[in-house]
Length: 490
Image 1 (spheres, one colour):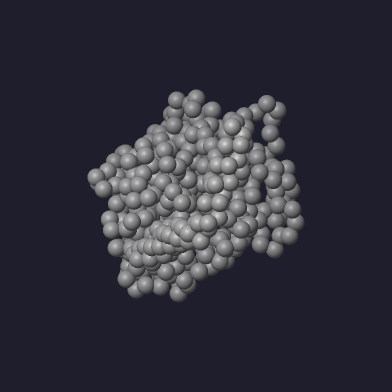
Image 2: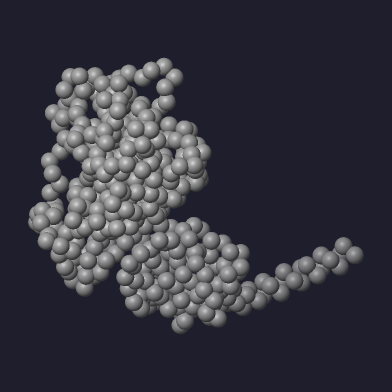
């Protein structure tokens, strides 16, 4: 048996040896056939890549969810948020090997991935895949939100005369892994020249933040792009839900800084049920956020009367070079030395009752005190999202916060000011826009006015005594029914 096997082995070996030229030719033929097929596929892929074009640019007016929209050949469409999607995900939505159209929003990096791990970048806008072979072999999607990409795209828009006429709003979501609804979001708005100042607030507020940046002029996008080209700044804004607002530059309306519109935008895209509206120049004490979450939110949930927790605000002289205050005792020392003072202490922030705020506490007293509303008061406060939004007819400076406080008072809100926490800002020159935009906007004859327009509206809706401190629980106030311009803290 062994002998037969050896003979057969020698016969097979002898046969292969005699046919070696033919075997080599067959091997070479198969090799070149496979190589040619692979090369053809690669070349075809490159041709497809070159032939992909945007049928129409997406002129995003809003981009709230940053999702890619993909439709298959049966016109079944699905939306895809930024992440890596595998074949099972695509099969579930019936786009595995079956992509017809793709709509990529502003600031989204979108790759189609094939079985052979070929990656094809899809441009922003609407792409028709009907005649593209690559769309028949899609097995996964690689989608990511890219702030720098969004800013580069906005920069291109700003160079185009047609796109300058388009209003564009871009939302870049926070990268916080978990978002608790029973939390407080710091809400703010500013122009590009406040980027550096706002870094102080970012450092002091460890919780969620929603900020809107308004592009005052077409050139503002360039310093903003340069700012976010630095990785340290991208890291700073990781927990910020950031909104970029490019207005229509074809009319003079953009010169009127839409301050309340921007505040409302930031409130609407925040993920939490509570928020703290603060201007970007201010810096909160480092413990304000934790205090708000641990104490103020439970109180707001417990109170039956709608309540606003007022955060006292102070100013520090511009030439001060010492340690910034983080406690009431440190702030009291700056007041005594003449470095700190109350901005607009008679009308705007005087009603907050800073004598009480700065006084030494009685043992076991409440960490807050009640304030009765005064006309023209414009405090900063922590609220529930059940509160009304700001009136967007107010632009630039003047009346924008006063109107909101008046409305809350007319609705019966109670105002409680914090004793141990505050916000502060450094003295600074008035905001100057390129071309004098702010000044031009404020001098507008059709500017909506707090006294001439808004107060009569509130009185017509809530009564002539709508400036009466309706939510105040102090017996003296409740017993006296007289129309007052203001009641002080006592």
